[in-house]
Amino acid sequence: MPPLLACHSSPLTPLMKPSSRLRLSRGLFVLPTLFTVGNLFCGYLSIWASIRGMFESAAVLVIVAAILDALDGRIARLTNSTSEFGEEYDSLADLVSFGVAPAVLAYSWGLSDFDRVGWIGSFLFVVCGSMRLARFNIQTKVVDKRYFVGLPIPAGAATIVSLVLATPDRLVSRVWMAGLLVMTVLVSYLMISTIRYRSFKDLDLRRRRPAWILPLIAALFVVIALAPKIALLTVSITFAASGPVAKLFSLLRRKPPSPPLPSP
Image (cartoon, rainbow, N blue to C red):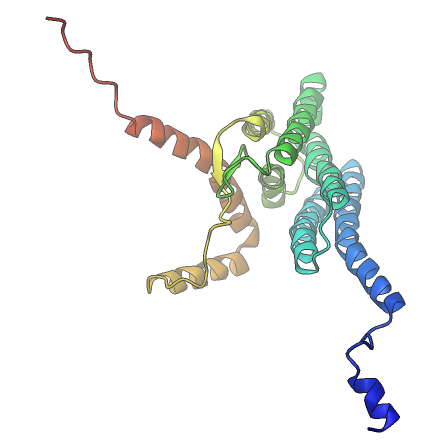
């Protein structure tokens, strides 16, 4: 056999140099971290935009941060580069993008006229969001994957952001300001509550579905394309309310205990 062919056919010859494999593994590890940094950067820019009165831009940046947050975990799993560092760093970025940024946006957009009550309400959102993230980090291995315990912090941020996108001008009516304050407090409570929300992680898109599902999905995309702001507001409020509504129905369906039998 010629030496050249023998070299290529030898099973002991590595297909890739160790240095090349090391650089590739490092690159795969850095890739999801770059998405997390992008998430954090969008949260920082959102805070800066809120302070400058650019409320619509601040809301859009939170949405972009949510997209990057959804991608970094999937990329880490696809590249087999998940790590405890990545999980902790992702939580810190989420606290800025979905905790601090929406709170500053809510205060600058409609709570600043309430002075002390306004900033306390917005700070409550940050506190509850941070507690929600901390609880999620320690319960990942002991809870049902089909449900979230408490409203996820990105969903809480989406509730406030969707309101801003629907009416990006600064609030001037005290009634709407009071409504925003109440909603901020309610969303804060939902994040730390034990109310369960569907995670849809068990949704199997490959399974055969009824014939009406495809037209419904197509109609949903049409609504999103024609009125994205209204669609986002509807989806975010519906999801935030789905947990308490499901909890209420479960309590109503629960049968009352049967009365004890009389003693002989």
